[in-house]
Image (cartoon, rainbow, N blue to C red; front, top):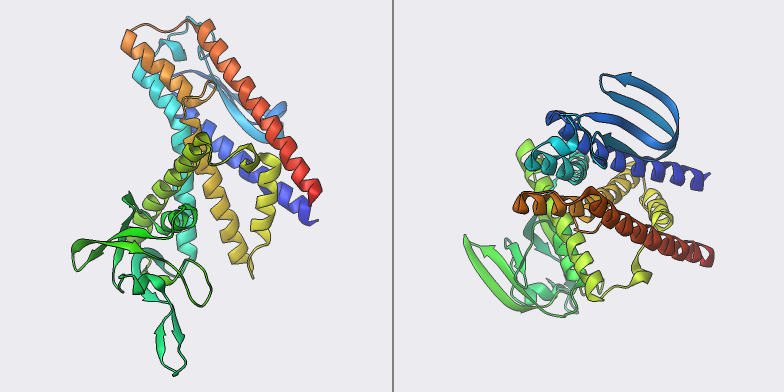
Length: 355
């Protein structure tokens, strides 16, 4: 029963993320007066469908995404409202609207999470870990305090990399292959850099040896932190992609839909109560939707980023590239992505049976 619930949650998450992406293309096309022939939720045979104006709306059998089919997107058309007939800048907004909506979804989910929390996190150090020595005195258990950090310091950057949120902070500390850091903080209104800072909690042997202040919840603090955390998540994903290309991570570190379902199951079962499990699933959904948004912006053939590059070339040379050539490039790119997905899925299935 637990596995069935997990699969249903995973399908719902995937469906929402893809539909939101396609809705971004859809609403941008409508705003730019581009004819949308079909907008579908799901794939495969139609279960329900109706026509409203120029667009057929449908609900399909397999809840694994959706699509937005625009007139003149892949084939030539004489329709004045066809995608290809609109100015380049309008087509660019339509292409970018899909990934943008994924980032918006991530932002809104972070807002929801913050509304369920008691306080809004900050980057200001509230207190350090403490312990009791042999004499019964309370002393610091935080190596970072012994390295020069102080209560009230607001962390601004680590090793020159700007820190936007606590997610950014934790990722930086956990993935950097070094024992010491140069920490830039805001102290008494001035920026101060403390060199060779070491993080170590004597009580837990972990890196996190301090706690941050929580700010009162209000629209300003929630929206501000949600925006920063969205940027931090996008930055985290971008850095992971760079590290993947550089060889720090390999194919064995990738996960496809099967692996993601396993992670969702872990998220859905972690926590002592429903609220904690809900927050865990929402956190994972935020990561997935921002991942989809950032990944789609990459100039990989078949993705929105590649389509944007073709439009950029058209804007520069004032002449579109032949649709046949562009279609061939996208076909090759999609074939390569599907092959990668198959390999990753086989790897995920192997891991599943090993467990």
